[in-house]
Amino acid sequence: MLFRKVYGVDMGSSALKVYSHQKNKVYQERNMVAVKDKRRVLAVGDEAYEMYEKAPDNIEVASPMAYGMIADIMKAEVSLYSLIKKIHPYQWFGSVMYFAAPADLTQIEKRAYNSLANGGWLQNNKVWIVEKPIADAIAMDIPLKKTKGSMIVNIGAQSTEISVIADGKVIISKALKLGGRQIDLEICSEINRANRLQIGTRTASRLKTSIGELYGKKEQLRKVIGIDTLSGLPREAVVSSEAVNAAIARPITAIGNEMKTFLERTPPQIAYSILKEGIYLAGGSTRLKNIDKFLADFTGYGVCLSEMHETCTIRGVEKMIKDRYLQEWAVPVKQKKM
Image 1: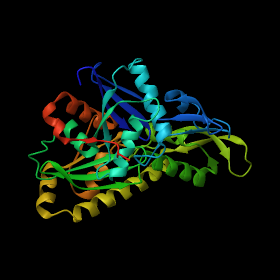
Image 2: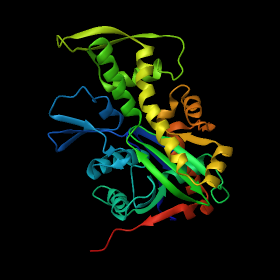
Image 3: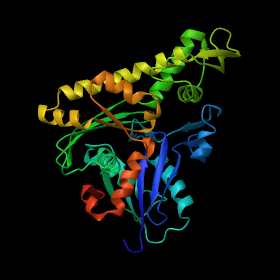
Image 4: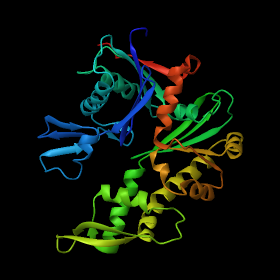
């Protein structure tokens, strides 16, 4: 690895995060690609996100990831290549890439990451896979080999991964198709019912972060512009925090129910260790106000909220790259020979 650049990569559904070991810095950009007529790439990253929900029908703006998994390898490569070129414009010897990925990937899914890093623009790269719960545990200083049971819940943009780590490995993990985007869609649906107004997910996301609050007591109001569902014309309406909070509570309650079911199926000695430690919470959607208190009351377990939120996973990969003793939790991936 003397001449190779080393990167840590978290291909999130909402944001792409890349850690450069040479520059000792994490770079982040929207994981979006804008394509015209299904062929020509118009924009990537933050520039593509500015076109989201505004582009005409012949321009598709979407993330190459779906529910935490690679949905379109070609677009994922475009997104990754674009950000790496901004970090290091010139690549001479290939790189070493540590990809944070969901736990329990099949061999075919693991090889997809190798194809992503050695497809067209990206070549001659060595690929390692790091399980996301392991990366989160490293970032939150959970002693991997000493813990008798630690539960990590990562609530991302489109998915939630619930995992239990014991004796240095992920013993059980489950991915749910619930995350920030599903919360945004619930807000859109709630405002449609209450105000007969159709709004976009970008507007819903702004409402979520500005007035959304689990256990919110003080009512707040915001003006929004959308499409009247009866006339089809644009109009302004006032949205209450009560409606937004009701929409937020539904998917978070569903996540809480899955956590309770997960804990009920966990062996008693491991569940006892989790009870003593508390449940570790990370992911971009954990920025919701009082989400830790809500899930603690709902499950009956203490909740330890990571202040790193959406960068928790990539910070764990960063620590792994810097500490060779942690690299035993990284698994090399090689392309299957034909």
